[in-house]
Length: 410
Image 1 (cartoon, helix red, strand yellow):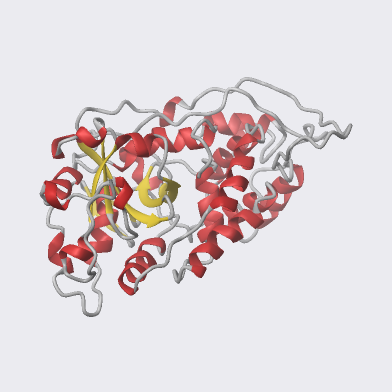
Image 2 (cartoon, one colour):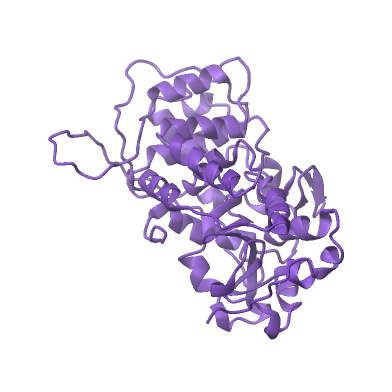
């Protein structure tokens, strides 16, 4: 029903799923922020004649401004969706150069908290435009700053994926979910891997969707875009056409309305708040780890007439949450309903609670919403997610708010 996981950007989603694991351990003591964490990406965009005349003139921590964004967009390739060959003689000139991963954003996961998988980049770069002639633009340019969501919207439009973004949002609205205006473009941006999750020691670098985007963050996204082959954007286009949502009951709508309101919020290790919070001794922006996201939706939110809903989930970590329901109340994949809390482990359906290292909320139609490597985002329940799916629980049924409590359709 959905596009196979062979597509590169979906493989990135799969690899970064571990970023949602929420075994609450403190980040390494004495860790320092790296001011120029995006140096490889900055080098890439400068080499394309974008954003600065040199790496030393780049000023990565300055906010990106609207005049700069307009200048960037004018020099980037457009409408990158690749359509099937129609047999005509139209050709596109491309150039291919190797790219490397950014070692400053790669950390090795541990057995207790595999929350920082490597951020990968493609091995080829294909563009449909040539490097602009003349001197590179100055760095930076004065003007009104650009928010993260506005920047993502601009890149999605640049890639010819406005219609796909609109379809993602329309399907949710049609199902009765009041998805925010940024829902479609943030969904697309994160499916394409345009956002990055910083290591826990650098969580102060994370940004809310409404925050001004820094030039370093912008450079990271642009470098990703310049590496696209067209397969990535075609996958998003195809996936948007196949998306469907089931009919939702009133309680499912309440839960999912609140969950999708956080689309685009960053992954914060130990985070469980949409506003400024202190975790592990450092004050950071709003955001969530995987279990913190579920905790916020089901534990910290008050719903009218909720009864015992708050008391259904008691533990803060993934493995405790997963072990709070006995085998007789575990939900199998073929019996999932919107609002169910999903659990993933290395042994799949043979996992024990101690093996569980990721959690998410089921949207319906084969999709889930989670806080993971790209922040709060949605992704199809296939590939890694299908292979690692252990079981789910149904808090709405546990609290007596829905009548159906099917555990398996097999």
